[in-house]
Image 1: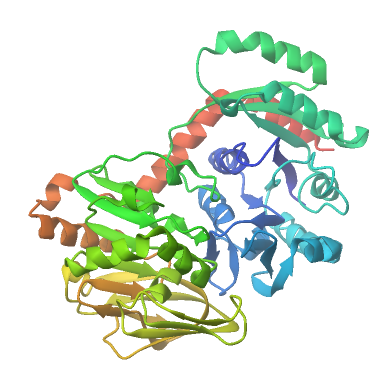
Image 2: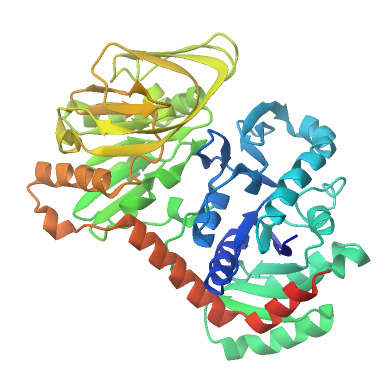
Length: 498
């Protein structure tokens, strides 16, 4: 069985996912076969594997860093919030149902065998499994039948590295307080502390490092700086969504819906230096972008009502009336249609008028579409005609179907069958395809089209080889973290286990 190492955090967004990604890359560089594992993830960013199963994108990114094919075994439980108190529960890549937090908490013990089967399968295949916790292990109201933090560490016999976020302040208190709230046998499993997201003069920090080691009797195995690397983010806490971005040569605005999902679709566009990609949640933030994107969402009808209340629907209509291009993906595509009907109560029931920019109608159902797609863009009109004939690949994750009588924007192949997808009307486009810009050709086709409309030379904006860029970012992350951690100590912890 594989050796195991677990990264836990004092809070959400402490940097667990990024550290696991870095360790996966470092171990791979050092000659180990390695796999990531997070037993339970809560996120709206998800991915469809080659087998047509759904998993969290954070573990996909970690698998890419490790140089292995993403597998649903790396994330056997995915919770996709659909309200403030309920989530869609996905087990081994398939929908188990939608549950309230209370109902899920009552039944989660029954999922422990599922989690352990997935973990043991990975453990039998790889040299090392790097596990990731969720939130904090010190959530004392949630510790019963824990299957993602200390409970998982015990079952996997994984020594734990505990990281804290110094950028938010209070890192020493959060590290010491977390250890204080653990049981004695749990505290003994914490083999190292990591201070993450540090900015400033390390010499000023060192007295605190020495004191926290004395207080906790746990060594600090690294102080990791605030890293400027372009790696996919875990969830809605991502700084990408709140950072102020100044419009550049090509300006793209993504409507930041309250239940936005798979915003990682747009990361490839951010890799181009002269492209600004902005997330907009108010009309006064919109400005005059070259393209407006309506992204995916877990709650299409509620988020459409939010767009109406905020005035963003009217702003999108005004932009389209001037010939400005609009692109809807998944839930955003559904919004752009004429009607949305939900007779089975998938999204609460009822019927809602769509934005009306595409002549399509959506009928929600309890059957979830999960499939990989490869194909080409059809001959397109309007501003994005430069995409015509280019190859495209991605995946579909949605409830319900959308019917259209217009020419399709994509012609994909699914299990050997021609599968049309999406619709166009002038310079308004819609598709169910996530990962639309994962291929270099699609990114260049989009930007070339937008440059042509503005009279800008594409060469001024520049092209990026996305695969090479992603690999370089993984290597940059690994190099920075390796320099910041006591890797000799971490390898010792790994070898000794529990």
